Length: 254
Image 1: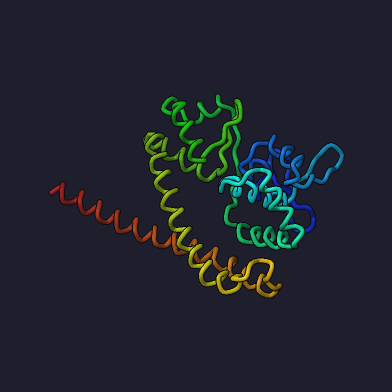
Image 2: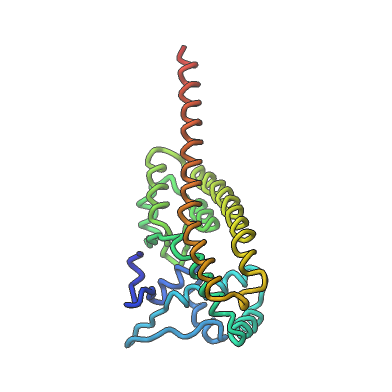
């Protein structure tokens, strides 16, 4: 669990305003705007602290997804209201929360631009930072830069210190993102056709508690399977590629 998230005593997460915005990938100022437009319920307050929950995070991600699909804010508000009145919103949010929970468990790292330059050294340029932001590896807010994944940041720094130019690391990162999205699409397609397709053909509002439980269990089973398949195949591919490289080096020495 990230240091920015705490348990609320019932197994759910609690987030401060900046933390839930960072986790959802939205601007802090959007939270108040979404609340004013009726898209987001108000947070629970303890004194001067506003606490947001996992439900807020899930809804923020849903709003971002709908905006990305071309819906307007007014259209999203009407859609959410219709789902709420029909009882389908709680099912949708609950299912979405279960389907996305535990896929990504990362610790964000925030630093100033000066600290960023110190960490990466003179080889990193402003153009590298802009491209990293475009690829989603960093978010820039004024003088502060946030890396959503400490693991990716550490891996990048290791490569830079070994002499690999940051621009080329970003090239590889973009390629990996594209390939990872393709693999994810294949797994989700299998899941949609063979799990949700069988259970949810009539829509979320028609699903029984037993059917929702079955889909949730299937999602939980998919996580380690997908991860193991990708990790194993990548390890096998790297072993073959390294063997071929070593064989080529040996031939050149003869």
